[in-house]
Structures are given as C-alpha cells and as structure tokens.
Image (cartoon, one colour):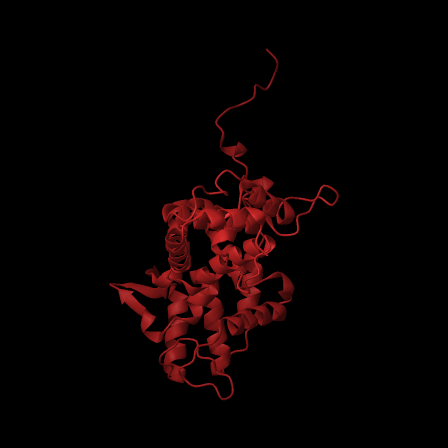
Length: 334
C-alpha cells in the first residue's frame, strides 16, 4: 500500500512527466547494476539494494523500488536502516550485521541515489549525509604460519592426477595469492615466459587481465603435471565422475580442496578458506620487508589500505620501531 506522501506526489505529477521518470528509473537501475563487468559485483549491488528496500517495505519480490518508493526515502529512513542492522545494540554491544557489510551497503545505496539524482528521478540523495558504520582496519580471515603452510603442502597425496592438481592449486593459492574465481579460470596457455621470467596470466573480476611473475617451483610443478597427465584447456579440470573434460573445478570444489588439505595438516578447517592463503602470503611478504607498493601490485589491490588490512603481523609487539630509533638514554644522572 502506498504511503500518503507517495500518493500526494503522484497526484501532483503530470502523466508525461511521470512516464519519463519511470523510464529514467528503470534505465538508471539497469545501468547501475551493469556498470561493473563482474557478474558477482552486479549480484552484490542488486542484493544490497534489495536488502535496503525490503527493510523499507517494498513488496517487489526482487526488492526493486517503485518510483514512489524511491522518491519518498529520506535521511530518516536511511538512518533507521543503518541503526537497525549495523550499529551495536546498547545492551549486547553487538550489531546484527557486520560494520563492513553496512559500510558497503550504504555506499551502494548512496551511489544508486547519486545516479537517480543525475537522471532527474529524485532531487536529493537521502544517503549523502548519513554517517556510515566504521569498518575495522583489521581483516578477520585467519592466516597460516610458514610452518603450517609447509605442512599443508607436504600432506597432499601425490601420484594421481587429482593429487597433483590439488597440490598445484594450493601452490597457486599460497605463492600467487589468487582469488578462487581467478584460480579456477586458469588455462594451460596462461603459463608463459617474458624473456627469462616465467609468468602467469590472470583474469580478474570485471574482465581485466594482469600478468604475474610465476614462482620457479610452481612452474616446475605445473609443467610436470601438464606433461604427465596431458592436461589441455583448463589448468584445473573438474575430474568428477561424468564431468566433461573441458569443465574446470568449481569455486566450491576449490574451497573444499583447500579445507581438506588444511584438515589433513591438523588445522581447524572451519577457521580457514582459500582467502587465508592471500592473507598468509601478503603477511609473509610484508614481514620480510618487501615494499608495500610491490606487495599491493602483486596482490591486485587498487589501494594500499586494502593490502594493509591483510597484514596480520602489523600489531605484533616484537615488530615495533623502537629498536630503530637513534636516541639514547643517559646512563647516570648528571
């Protein structure tokens, strides 16, 4: 049922103006959801808008607002949404959903309304001045120690195509820091050389490509695996009973490979994921004093702040800068 304010706005608007606004709303929504070439990002944007407008009472099964619903959103509704899900409860000190999720969702809502304002659908952006939850500067994904990584890699059963595939997949996670979606899309022809440097071509989300230097041991393992099992096409085939030869392992299958390998090494699999390998590699590189800009570039991060969120040793007390200070305390009182 439309609110009294929505009905009043609709009654004052000329039919032609309303049709124009409806078309602009639909065009803006479609453009907003498709502005990233990544299907996963588009799904995230859609889910974030759906969560917001369903909270406000939208009856559309997809959560997409009507013209009047979009226009009657005010600063108060956006603030109520933020307070409901993303601010800590006064009694428990906890919020229903993570602050990181809230910061992202409110950013999506604000960006959506910026597009609607530019298209003339709304006059103001109701989310513009709503303070967003402060996301933690520390990531939550558990990293592994160097000793744990060695155990994980050593425990993988060798000899069969599945075992060699799984070991190579784990090596790509730990040494190349690929995301799951990037790893499962790798093809045999993505392994190459730039002069004397072995390289790996990676297809990132959004359709972008980048070329990474490939660790020598990973190259050796990959070439042996490809030659021995005559692998063509996807580097990590599904190998499931009845699966066609040209189908890669699924992201879910790759996550299962990682968790099983960690469990075999005595690590609680419920606390780790392939993302832990990115955390582990980035932390190890920064601890080894690899410059931040080089680590950021290799990880494929747009901003250094994102890379630092992966650095699990940042707060270690034994890594303070105190020992490097040139000052000296006097030995005796003058």
